[in-house]
Image (cartoon, rainbow, N blue to C red):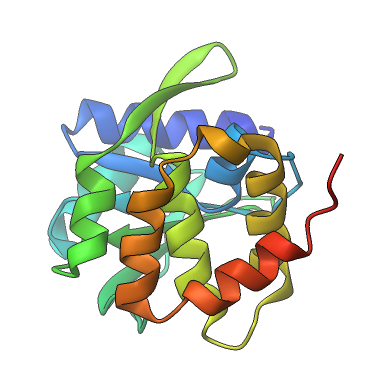
Amino acid sequence: MTSNQVVLAVVEALEAENVPYLLVGAYSVNAYGVPRSTKDADFVVQLRSEGVAGVVKRLGDRFQLDPQMSFETVTGTSRHVIRVADSPFVIELFCLSNDAHDAARFSRKRQGPLLGRNVLFPSPEDVVITKLRWSQQGQRGKDIDDIRNLLAVQGDALDWDYIYRWCDEHGTRELLEEIRRSIPKI
């Protein structure tokens, strides 16, 4: 199974279990910016922790749920890791939190193509906002690069008032402006 086939299998399992989801992380960056490779697929899901077992059961024997759930500190949510047999590729399911931006991002989801199938992604604005928040946890280089590439591709098509509002709330406006200044003018 390719990584994209794994992602589509997870999407199909989530939809079959009626689990609302967003495909986030590198896959959402790839939907709106400059594509890059990744060793995992991140989903935000609206389900209780015990609901993960039904999704994993539907996926079949090639998929194994890590027995230990972890905690994500930016939005204060739980994270479940699903491993794929004979593959380094990993699925991470982040439970939707009560964080205001997490809820807003989830409500603004959009359909986009992946291997000829529509899947649900956050808006490009919400990808920028989320990546900015994550980058505060140690200036993760890939997040900064993802933001820069997404801004370079999307530019004026973005809802800048929406982005600025959340950046001001999260204290990431200065970093956003620094990244914007680093994008070469064409």
